[in-house]
Image 1 (cartoon, rainbow, N blue to C red):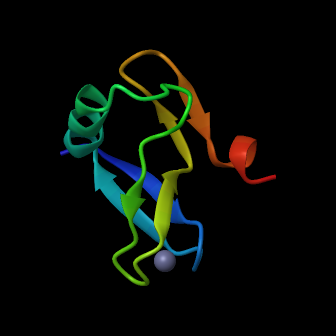
Image 2 (image 1 turned 90 degrees about the vertical axis):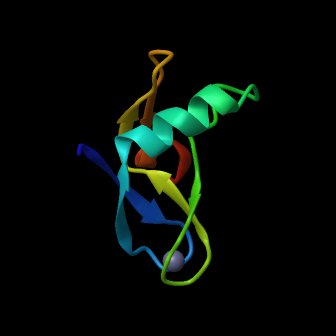
Length: 68
Ligand SMILES: [Zn+2]
């Protein structure tokens, strides 16, 4: 299964999230498509965001864009 690297905004640890889980989350989410899909850090419970991810709607999310 393909996985996407996410980084925790709190502890900076890297986690790999299955692509299917991200896409499922995007399909369910009818919110702002400019906000990347976020998951919970398994280490500290913080928020993890994708380091680089191209969404099913064609948006590209980069960690640096939202954490500079
Ligand atoms: Zn964390």
